[in-house]
Image (cartoon, rainbow, N blue to C red; front, side, top):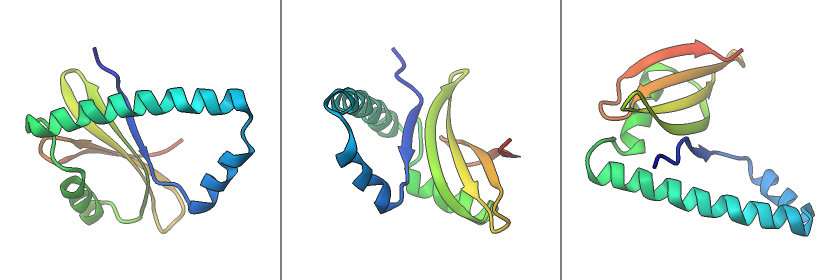
Length: 115
């Protein structure tokens, strides 16, 4: 049962401070999301152990060499039986690029500007 996409978000520290403003129902919904995130992390850990995916550090090293900029979001998805890291990169020009990477080999499959 796939629980994907798995999202790893790199957030500015100030964003976390906003959590204290959430209402009780919103905190409950956030807690439920945490359970899903734990399941997603387990799926990713198992894929790594089975050598179906490379460690994220290895993939990021390849991406940074091919697509310069700041990484702002990473998702791990299963598409047509293949694990894909979807990485959003903000270039020096301020434009966001969506970079698809084969999670098993680390090869960049596609780079497209975010619309």
